[in-house]
Image: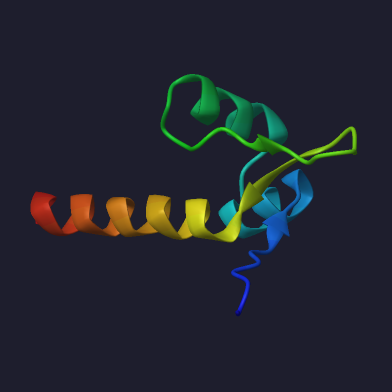
Length: 68
């Protein structure tokens, strides 16, 4: 049985990919423009699952295609 293990992206990694500040990222999450991070079990950190970020990216691209 093959397990589906996803990478968990840290806040710093997400900030680097998006090219935004930490304040902007928090504002995006608060305004539901970007998915909220999940808690990493056993650690005092939050992160984003790869699949969650891919789903967000797909919705963003589809929304841009509709607007054109």
